[in-house]
Amino acid sequence: MILESFETGPVDCNCSIIGCPETREALIVDPGGDADKILARVKELGLNVRQILITHGHFDHVLAAREVQKATGAKIAIHRKDAWLYRLTPVQTKLFGGSFSPRPPRPNRWLCEGDVVEAGSIAARVMHTPGHSPGACCFHVANNSLLFSGDTLFAGSIGQWRFPGGSIEKIFASLDRLMTLPDETKVIPGHGPHTTIGKERQSNPYLDEERRELLRREDAERPGLFKSILLMLAQAVGLRRSG
Ligand SMILES: [Fe+2]
Image (tube, rainbow, N blue to C red):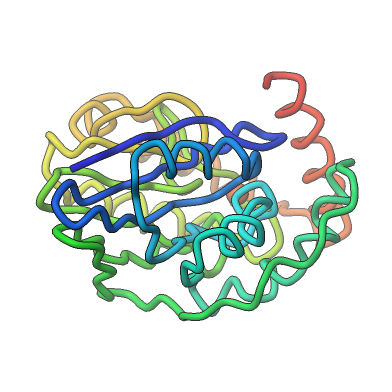
């Protein structure tokens, strides 16, 4: 399998290119920006991109979707429950203090739990893992012990559940589901360093029931939508500083 993963866009989203060495067919996961960088790598590797898989509809995972689709003709696939977020990419970009971005292209395929997306010998199974957003998905490439976890699971952390459409209970349940995968599964999250399911099973603090209880209590005083948007802004500033 050909695998390249690198940071793209204003919030350093991990964009991945997965290719079949025999057929040269490929998938792209989360084109978060820097379309030129993505397309140059696709060209250098001699790949024919079949589908663009979007883990969820936050702007930082889709900013290069239009240009990558235009250049490759690949189909765009996302879970239907995140369609509204995806369509609001220009608004999200503005809210996070970015420059105007055009609405991303219309999706060609709605991803569903259990779907298998293929490119040559690559077979990525869709796991619907809500919590960070309603339509958040992970992609499990079982033959290669690989998981693209989007913003559901990070190395030593999990995604923010207080964004509009998020849910603390759902992200905990999604995390538990990911922990049913084999220890050796390599995890490429939406941001930050790569990890493995085994490492996370041993040390991810969000698997600890006491910590979950504490977070549940805090979440019971959960802010409304307006305050959620302010939190999104604060998070954006934090992410941009840390990036
Ligand atoms: Fe996100």
